[in-house]
Amino acid sequence: MDPALEEIEFLALSANRVEVLDALAEGAHSRRELGDRTDASQPTLGRILRDLEERKWIVRTDEGYAATATGRMVAEGFTDLWETVETERRLRDVVEWLPTESMGFDPRRLGDATITVPSRTKPNAPVQRVLELLRRAEQVRILSHAFNEQSLDVIRRRTVEGEQTFKGVFSPEAVEAVADDATLRRRLRELDGAERAEIRIYEGEIPLAVTITDELVHLLLRDDDGILRAALDTDDESVRSWARGLYEEYWRDATPFDFGALDP
Image (cartoon, helix red, strand yellow):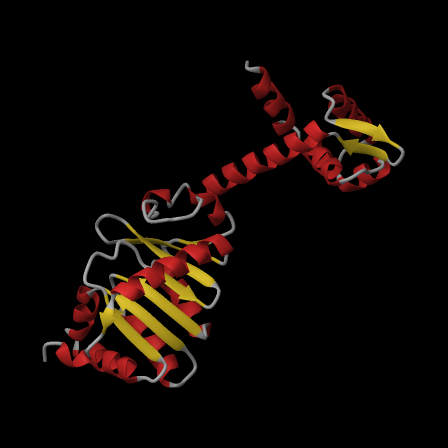
């Protein structure tokens, strides 16, 4: 086996080794403090400390033990690897539907994202998640190729009642589909007439659906047939920055919505 892989395996096979090295990378600790921080027995802790010393990842100090420069480097690198693999495991079931070509951020930024998928008992769970966010948001911005009935109803009600500020960029097909239904057409008219609402139309392809509710970014993930497969939301700053920039880009290139121009 490659020597570097052997060292990775050495750490990976013991959560206590990782915990001890991480603790010492943060600063000096006594043996008692390390024992309190881990579940390791004193004999096991002794072996861990000897193994780490042999690799020159830690040294003895007046306060007990501390990580060396290379020990801190290994601890940081192993943490990065762990976080990368953990994020991959969480995204594994939805990665095929992520709009990766349009995502201007590192997928690892989705490590703490909330992922909602349909289930047998809750087949509409992704939509319910976005509705939950819409119901409590004070500011909503949407960039989308679709505008579903439930989202329209929540946004219309909260915006008309002055509880929410709404700005949306939609494809022509999205608003035309709404206008084809008499009930939805009335709701769209009410929303369009609300003082705190503004809608624009983008004459071109909108490759993804992004909703920004206050400080959360929400993505609806669909397959090639347009079937909703999952919802994902996060408050990660890098993702927020990407979503805001993308939204503003489409907003600038879109034109104000003219309800009167819709076919009667």
